[in-house]
Image (tube, rainbow, N blue to C red):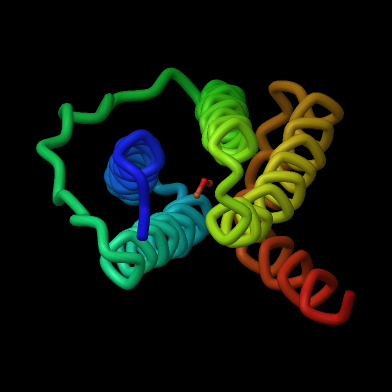
Amino acid sequence: MLNKRIEQALNNQLKLEAFSSQYYLSIASWAENNGLNGTAEFFYQQSDEERMHMLRVLKFINERGGVGIIPQLDKPKDSFESITSVFNDFLKHEMEVTASVNEVVAICLEEKDHATNNFMQWFVSEQIEEEALVRTLIDKLTLIGEEKSGLYFFDRDLVSMKANDVTINNTL
Ligand code: FEO
């Protein structure tokens, strides 16, 4: 049975994952409307992943005797300066998610809730992978700079870079 403090922390995490899904959907839609089809596909996939994260937390709360709350969400940003600013914001957002995951883990340790701590370790690993992927992509964008053909190939190859990342992660 979840104690109330843990239940609240997990519901906060659920809300952040739900917001992440909407945020990345907003980026995908912006990219699609600006001729960045690879970036759009990348963020549509990312949005789906965040929805799965949200569901994972929701089901855990309910299975452990708590009540998962479907939250009202703020409207995400819907216009972006450039592909580089999109990826910088993406990293910033994922670092906030990581801080939130760490906070839930810290509360689990204080409350001696080892089951929830164990559940949260999947998110700890996931955040390491997500941040590493975004940093790699930002490094590539830094190398490309403002060069149009470089940005064209970056956009075109984004989905396969994500697929390769998933393949590498699944074989670990
Ligand atoms: Fe589920 Fe990207 O945080």
